[in-house]
Length: 293
Ligand code: NAD
Image (cartoon, rainbow, N blue to C red):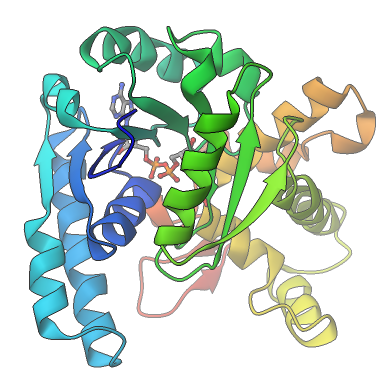
């Protein structure tokens, strides 16, 4: 990685990749946003545009900053464009095979000094690092959803991550105006290790008929002062992502208390993945979300 980061590559233009591109561009970095799917790139740019416009309306940034930020983002389906990056943040689908394939194609293109980070929610950083040519310059930079709004970033070192990589990542994350929490490389790190079993338990509560979707979400919103109910939050995160994190906890920690709820598996099998597919624990196809149970 260059001593100074000027250009950030983002791999995967999904809900997280779009947000990462947004905060990096706003902080003054040039951003190369890469995805294999043209429609995802278009959707990501539209999301960034919409969210920047909202920040102007709420007085957080001015119109000049909005225009400059947008002009700093280049969306591309050409992987070779990432050669210009000083840091690449991989934020593709939460699937180890997909990520390994990306690293195999990406690493030969990057400068040997370029830092490579992953935004994975649950996969071992050490294991992902071993699939790259640069375990010393590889680590986890785990953003929270929605990236422009959430203040926290978890930093996770793999076993081989060099101190200089870690220091540069700290400076980079601080330059985005985010607060850092350092986590050791164990399944799902800290936030999801605590959050996902709670969401999974909410799904068990539904599965066992203790409460309806509405009752469970109301209970946690008003009874525990959570800003969103756990089922609403699960739909927001994406039920496929929730399931893969629970599977990672279950297998990685070999403890039955992390067993994914069969109802979560069923929703994912149905392709009801939450907001992003229009249906999950709520149906989002009408004007207001309607519980599906
Ligand atoms: P998403 O499904 O919205 O986006 C994934 C994107 O990756 C898609 O646009 C897809 O086209 C792209 N992709 C798939 N294969 C690719 C390839 N070979 N090359 C380039 N792009 C490819 O998912 P997301 O919610 O944005 O999650 C992305 C990553 O961020 C995951 O690792 C996830 O665990 C992590 N994460 C998610 C959340 C969350 O709340 N959703 C929070 C923190 C971290």
